Image (cartoon, rainbow, N blue to C red; front, side):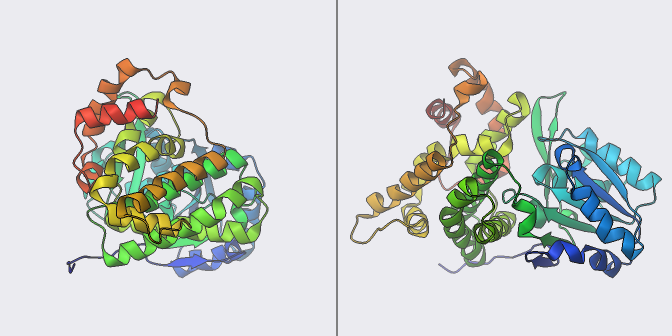
Length: 385
């Protein structure tokens, strides 16, 4: 079917083992000499800050470190980081870590040049002008935040998650070095990798998918399906880590252009109210949402099954499509992810309230290939219990 579409993304992408060593030259390309380095608490305790120092300081680049980022970051971190950036007259922001660190870094960059607080810019296209230049360096193969225009935060006072979405959040550079993912332990490797798979499947089945986004999303599915198990169980395998990071990158590009679907709407209240990590929350819900959406997108689910290595030749369309769901469930099982909603104290009586919040996360629901009601959401939560 012919359709009109647009395609956007990060201004520049550099991918390759050892590419972190080129960081100083990219800072200078932007005429910057005083970066704010945003990094999460756990990475700050590793040798990574020292590596960054050994790259930047010999190049004559002084920098400030903001290392308070935590998983499912509260929105006040963006405000605090922006104050530090302004106080120290930082002229570029470098985000290093998983989605939490990169989302916080992107928000800090725009807050440093726009008045007000992060909460003022939640929603779509509310940021009035560009921020500081942004370099994003992922250390997980998961969120794809290095190539998206979104920063997601928890508003603890409201017990909900909300996103800042603006073209001004697109990074000037995404610098992807697979070596940085080698030390990621099995559980976060699994959670972030399955998050990337979720992005790829959702963006591929989104009603806003285009021929270009579909190309990235489908290749992401294939790369993740082929390499995630190895990354979880043999984390030092650099070849698998390279392909997995590439798959995450492609999934992020697909996500940025086609959007996600009901999985993300349903997972937001799990993070906002219960503090469940984003990747795990998506993973728990993905099979049930796939089963719900399958009748509305048999052809696409057949494509997903093939991309995940299933043999669909000679099968009826619905039977072939169902293999996608089986393949995803098998991958989740093989990656050792067994948590359910019940593990977090969530009960059947909580589903209606969760669904109410999920209905407020409207954009992913609008992308969903099958119209979904509150009763449908409650049924999906029940399947994930």
